[in-house]
Length: 527
Image 1 (tube, rainbow, N blue to C red):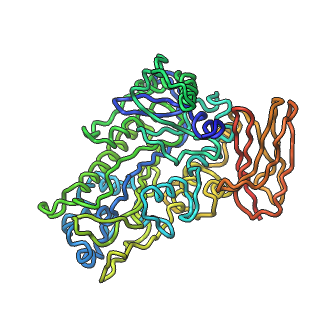
Image 2 (image 1 turned 45 degrees about the vertical axis):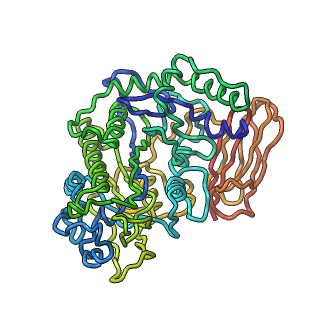
């Protein structure tokens, strides 16, 4: 990997590995003080709960009005009809009996269910389908950036230059755990997190790393450690801030991996972080075999255990943020890369499928359910699958517009297409605030453009320290459209026109590079 590419993907995010209550956590940023009572209320928060492996939607949200055909299609895994949990105000649809806590949340108006969520031309690979959900891409295109990363880039376009600062002192996004996710990858830099390891935390604080070999890879590792040492103050303050907030719910179950992660999220939110997005995850949903325990009429088994884990963790988290009085600022969403096939297999399990239900939770979701039960044919083969009713990007559009309060043009720029939003979030947006303007101006802007959106052309304004400046225009796939500047530019502010009259309407990216500084602006060309 070239040093420039290395910086683009890793260095701006910084490494901040450490553990809270035994859980590794990674983040970038500077936190507020160490006393919880000194913290001030922050803006809205999104919590993404990833169910890795492809959750069986037909064993999660059961279409009781299709029960006869469902029994024929999956006799080895079907639940007894009288054990399915009914939902208040919903006829013909129920939850798995292990999800009693989430049923109560639904009945109390704290959950919205979206039926049959997926995307056109479903890909059945775990890795590729996860990439599609993370990036918000079509199934036939590859995007390096994530939808959350593009959103954060829209809100804080100058990041990471001049961050942290008084207008944004905290991490933009935090992932609990050690997995590096694409979802927060911006166009030029990672917007939130990097590799995590509890042992490395102490090495980072002391600087006592083992010697590296005198090789190219060893030199790159030395450089990476230098970046980590420069940010150790952040890790200390993150840990201190987490320890300053106390969870108030007594519903967190012991030995629940997801609950352990959400417990940390509640601590950090209550601690006053301005962090916009948290990502937690639970694996094991690839239930090709032994999905149920046939001895117990399919009510128990590994999938039942997973659903109970999710249900109890989310319920405890919601109870906690309500008692901490921050629930009005928190919206949660579960997602999985795909569902499972209609028909069961010969191993008491189910194989990779297409659409599946998605759960939104929080005090500000609109109660109820969107969509209708999927249709189960009278005769089902192993090739049959569920039809998609809602494209997952319509939910992203709803979050961006009705939760994070982006306008339609900015939302289309983030999602790279025009997706209609759904009516799933209560009215929480007001007119543009001075805080939003501060976010866009926070940090050091090396490049801007005006107007944006634009019709035929736009003026790119950039700053030079008297160094080599490289400014390029690319499309959303990273293909080079034009090189605007590639030269040593005198110190000062300069302008150059970009003529896009021959380009199709859509989102393009203007990337500025000078030394270690990389900054990208999204350009929206309209008709």
